[in-house]
Length: 592
Ligand code: SF4
Image (cartoon, rainbow, N blue to C red):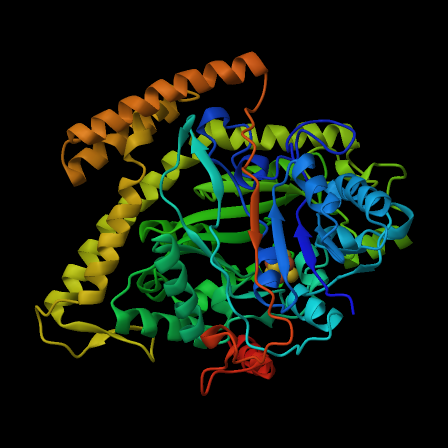
């Protein structure tokens, strides 16, 4: 009998270079690629690990190795070892030629090894004409892989410990603070027709962590392993399940842990839960799809986005708004109105993404049927930051590349570096929440977890212990930015941005006191690093790429083990929900 052994790998580096496999604009980063693009040394840089691979590896019994950010030689060494009966390659659409090179190598050197494909790249039509493979996972990966290896599908999910980002730097200096990632679920029930995520997961939500207790346990586990209290909650709309979000707050309150979170939310969901709840929960960064002034999506209809974003920022929640360019209603006049409108929202960060028919989406099917897709645009060029790959009645592809770049430049010139806006928001929020907490304590107002608001009921003057912990976490979030403030002044793109950075620096001094010796040393170091980074950028004539380190993790062989054989990791704690309880979360989402 053959013993199965699985390798799960991401695509090989280098990233962010133009070669026969990829594009320089595809840096495998999030912020620098499509949010703080055109902000030069002010742009925070980082790579996000392939979370899905770790999640799958942790949740199958077949012995598995994860290889993340490999060099070509790291990958070929694994294949040449002859150990693997199965190799899974995860890739996005623009990286399909890298996946092809990897698949070709496996077929040549290890012909008996089965090639499995996963990730958004599997939506490419007629994929088998591009590369060789044996099977492809086109939906949720954990259940698919368990089914593939004939394992029990509905075992409880074991959450991996994983950082949310690696290779983090800004102004040429390292970003020291780490955060963990918690993947609470995938997919979205809203079915915006352009959305790759919604379509990949069949327009439904699949929860991995069903209750607030489970989310809290995943945070605690990550805190212990990584010594972090800050987390990215990977979920298209975490707060759309109010029950789970409320339970998470209850668990944190009981344990006295004021964790902080970055997550995604639709505008309508925020309104339903209220900002007091989000602040208490510890949400400090929200990604909101604002898409277009034209309000063409249900999720933004009836929401005053200017007011909502200002309210969130006043309470210390930084906002990344994302807008779409070259939609069907855009012409050469209305596109400028939309860009100006998106900038006028004054979000801390702003993504401009090109409207793009991505394989697998309804938009792709519609455009394909209507003959609107341009022929012969290579897949590596279909990433939404350069030229569009469909016929638009008012824009040529070449024009779209220029409009997109200019939109980022306009945001940068109007509001200055995103990191300064974030520093301003964290500081402003700390002051607002401090004042509000003090006022509520004086009046004897206490948090009502049912009503999700503060009500009369406490002794005037009694301290809200949990909010005092929350304030300390908010203070730390603001102070993280102190070392970069002077470098932002030094390299500001214009006078307005310089004044803004100076004001923020002065407000920090007023709030937290004069910089300590350590603050001055750190600030001085960042200034030196910023100058050398600027020289590097000038010499190179573009972004400086730092390739992430290869990460190889071997998971144990659990084949044939009873679910209880590996202690807690494989048991269902009494009363813990199984997969069928997805229905509960979905019902909660629908009701919410
Ligand atoms: S709400 Fe966001 S995640 Fe959901 S379908 Fe629309 S774009 Fe996608």
